[in-house]
Length: 341
Ligand code: ATP
Image (cartoon, rainbow, N blue to C red; front, side, top):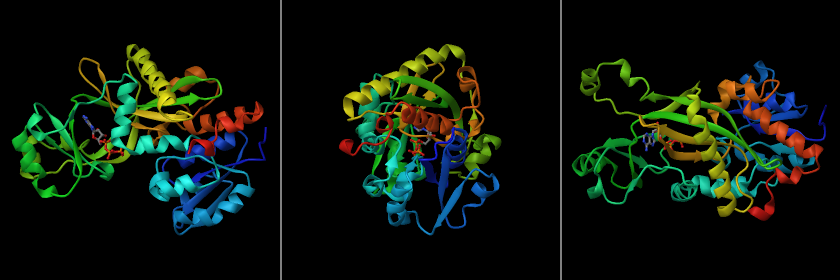
């Protein structure tokens, strides 16, 4: 079942291991582009057919001609925009799984909110003015990687005190949802127009997920600043009665994307949510591509076990979609079309 005409490729970071293994399991050759000094995992875990080392990811532009000639299909993951820049990614003419027209909707918090609200999902309230704060809020800075510097405030006075050191930064004041974080991984097939729930995770963030290990008194005495920098992911399944709502949410997001974005959203995506004690699911963000929360499921998740005969990671599901598209002569359906940019 070798699909020798195409080479599945990605950048060596984030979720590359499962993308490469998934490609192989579906009969593709693969290639990983790594920062010099970061290729050891791809060598040691024996998942890569070819490794190209670069000093800077920008070098992909110099490799572009050859990659196009070699029939490379790029699978984007969460490190792509950071590694190549938004414009750099848009400019690339290498075959690309997914729809680049979704990128501006994912990048911009206001557009994301419009998309999610129009899809009928419950989103945390936004406060336009600090004097409106009437409950717990989280203050999020723009471009703050890993939630660095985010803080909580219960009222205007507390907000003013905590914002003082951050004079020139742009931020939003968002309702803080008290509940359990839940990250839901979906896959939408543009070939058969079906939405699948692939898996779920909870993030392991430092230091908010470890602060509970020390007494409240010590937390105050040590003057600890909470931070949401992610260091790993833990597997999770939800109570089964939540599943119908979870499917509905994913379907609504895809349906709305077709109205807002030429070509719509397809492939893997993730809804980042907090579930309240009343089991209301608040969505605070969407990631419109494979997320690292799928990494615990290289051998499949409890949900993919139900649906597939063999192990099915999200990385493999992407390769399966490309495979199905090739077999049915519809490859253009799963690749970014320049018309949409
Ligand atoms: P990334 O882009 O990596 O997802 P970010 O810097 O955009 O991160 P968010 O994901 O928006 O930051 O938030 C960081 C963390 O803060 C989340 O993992 C979540 O646990 C928590 N969080 C964010 N928004 C809310 C909210 N409205 N209510 C409760 N918790 C929240």
